[in-house]
Image (cartoon, rainbow, N blue to C red; front, side, top):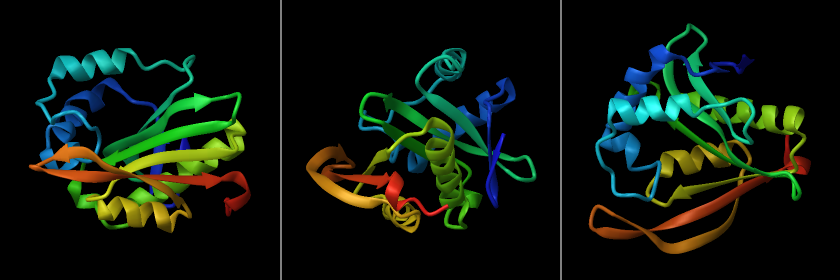
Length: 175
């Protein structure tokens, strides 16, 4: 659907469900995604999520696949504030074989292009946990700026961690 140099953003398919569940039950993947206590994700959870995806909502959910067609994760617009022209995004790469090889930054750049050029949004925002250094480097590589820090916002693995707020404005966007 939307193609970068390494990845394609496409619709989710039923055949992605089992692999997505596997990715989301990997602690190394899951710990970076949400503040809730990492708890096993069931097939029924994933099927319910999948059945709730809709093109008529103000969220845009994409499966990430390599240009060769291998499903490796997901990304999308989690919320849109149309009045203030702001979108909040998220991403995960569940297939560890693709970590640290540019697939995340290519996916972010492709998603950013979609948001600025198709949705006509002015600001893209995201949150990232301070221990997720690989993701922070990825976002900075994609020209996101640190806006602020929510101190000790998350309790994970026996410690408190900061949540970093980052954004990219349309005027900072480099096509």
